[in-house]
Amino acid sequence: EVVLTQSPATLTLSPGERATLSCRASQSIGTFLAWYQQKPGQAPRLLLYDASKRATGIPARFSGSGSGTDFTLTISSLEPPDFAVYFCQQRANWPTFGGGTKVEIK
Amino acid sequence: EVHLVESGGDLVQPGGSLRLSCSASGFTFNIFAMHWVRQAPGKGLEHLSAISSNGGTRHYADSVNGRFTISRDNSKNSLYLQLSSLRPDDTAIYYCVKDINSGDSYFDSWGQGTLVTVSS
Figure 1 (spheres, rainbow over the protein chains, first blue to last red):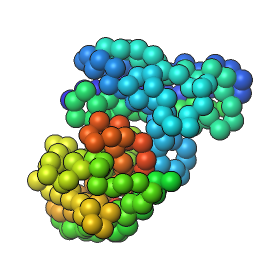
Figure 2: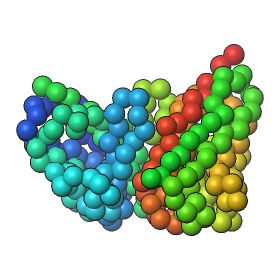
Figure 3: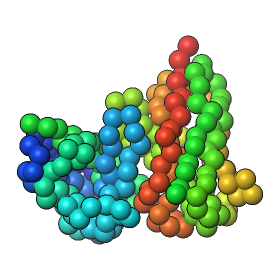
């Protein structure tokens, strides 16, 4: 099983700031990585897949990078709706998810 | 617009069974793989099972293999998950999830979820 470790667990930032979230895989997964956003009481929403491709309707302030074992989700300038929990997910093997990073308002 | 609606979640005793259903609309159901993903209260996400577009190929997580069965009825645009030998640690919200393609295992549409509680 590929284990995904996300850091930090919590990110406390102000609107307008840049957010950088990390996801590390226990083995190389190429670029087979997705990022999801989840708000309280809602299902997750796909943001990015194949490490850097934006899903339909996702704003350009969300970007992704990385390959192999180290991946990054960047939100260039946080807007109020962006405060949420973010999960990474790999599909190189049986799909697994990271534990999540909560982006909270400072 | 893609719409996935789960039903069937309930309170069930340990060792019991349950059948979850998912009604799909807004897309051509029979050309996409489908999945079930669960989330225990306050916890992370776990991919449970996948089924190919024609239902001919099915995969399961080790944690549910032999206890859960995924199926689909393309004539009814519906996905199912039969849960048996339920345990307290199966308590979770169960999401019906659409694959971004015919088996890429990226999840681009999710239902609102149905809650399964396993407790005596």
